[in-house]
Length: 429
Ligand SMILES: *Cc1c(COP(=O)(O)O)cnc(C)c1O
Image 1 (cartoon, rainbow, N blue to C red):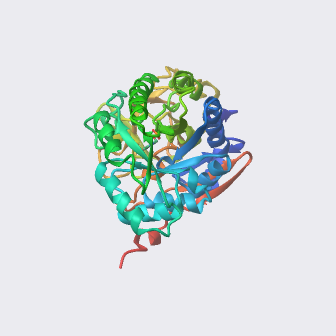
Image 2 (image 1 turned 30 degrees about the horizontal axis):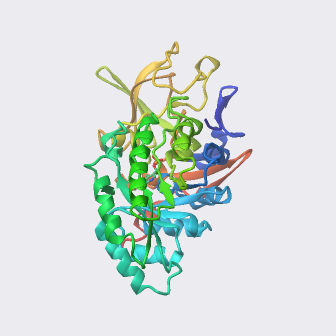
Image 3 (image 1 turned 120 degrees about the vertical axis):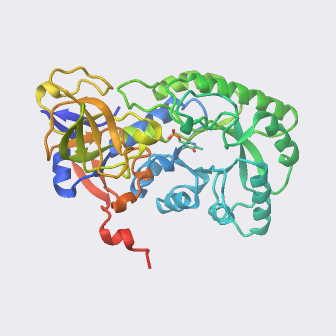
C-alpha cells in the first residue's frame, strides 16, 4: 500500500531513514513518498485501461506543485475546485484539457480564468451557474475555450454510509442537481450553441469502504443517459468522481482493481469516455506526518502523549472522526507493527491519548490507543497523512505550517519550507 516500512526497527520512507530527515528538517514534517504517489496512480490507470479513461487527480487532497508535477508527468489530469487550484496545476505544467472544474460557488473571476486556460470540462452544479457560464463565455470571445464543455453534476441520491461531513451524493446535500432536474436542465440548455452540455458528473463523497454505492449510482445515471440520448442529446463522457477508500487500515478498503471489476462491466460498450477523480486513494498513503513527543502526563484515568504537531497540521481526526495509525519511528523488534490497525494487541503497549499543543479539546490524533511506551523526545509517525493533511492545515494558534519533504528512493528534498514567524504576519499591515 505504500513505501513506508520498518527496517531493523527504524521507519524508512522508501530508502531514507525518517530520523535522518527529521534531524535535518525538524518536526512536525510531512514526508511524502514519490513512489507511492506513482504506484497508486498507475494502479488506477491499469484497472480502467479497458475503457477510454482519464484520471483527474483531486488537487484538494494534496496540492504541492512538486507533487502535481509528478502526477502530470505520469499522465494524470486534475480535478480542481478553485482558481487557486487552477493556478497550481498550470504552474505544474499540467495539460489544461485534462482539467475538470467542480464546485458549487465558482466566482466570475475563477470561471474566466478557467475559460482562458482552456480546461476540459466545467462540472456545473446548478442552473444558475450554467446561466452565468453562458454569459461569461459570450463575453469572453477571446478565450481559448470558444465552446466550453460542460458536465452536469447530478446527485444520484445514494448513501455511501460515510461520515455526514463527507457525504456529497445524497439529495439533501448542496452538490449538483437531482436526477429528475437533470432532464429539465438538458431540455433547457442541451441544445445551446454557446457551450457543449455533453457529459454527466457525480461524486458520492469520501471515503467509501464499499463499491456498492458506485454501482448503484452508475446504474441510476446510465438510465438517465439513455433517456437523454433517446431525447437526442449527445453524452460523450461520464465522470464518476472520487471517494474511493484508501488504506488507512492495512488492506481494509477495496483496491483500484476491486472497484474497476464492478464498474468497468457497467460501462463497457456504452460509448462513454470515463473520468475518475481520485484524491485520497492516490495521496493518503503517500505521506506520514512526523512529530516529536514533548511531554507525557497522567490525568485521572487518562494518559496523554503530547506531541508537537497539532490539529492545525492535521485536522482529520476531530473533523471526520478519522483513524490514523500512529507508531514510534523507532520500534524494538517486538514492537514492529505487523499491520496498521486500530487494535494490534501487542504485549507491553500502553493505552494513551495522542494530543497536540493547540488550545482546543478537539486537538487530538488518537484517543485510547495502545502504543509502545514512549518518552520525551521520541518521534512518532502519523501514517496515511497525505490526503487532506497539509492541504487542510492552518495557522491556528499562530503556528507556522509544517515543512513538506519529498522522498525519492534514497534522496529527499524539502518541497515546502517550514513557515517562520515572519511568514505568519507577512501579509498584515
Ligand atoms: C474531494 C473531491 C474528490 C476527491 O475525493 P477523494 O475522497 O479524495 O477521492 C473528487 N471529486 C470531487 C468533486 C471532490 O470534491
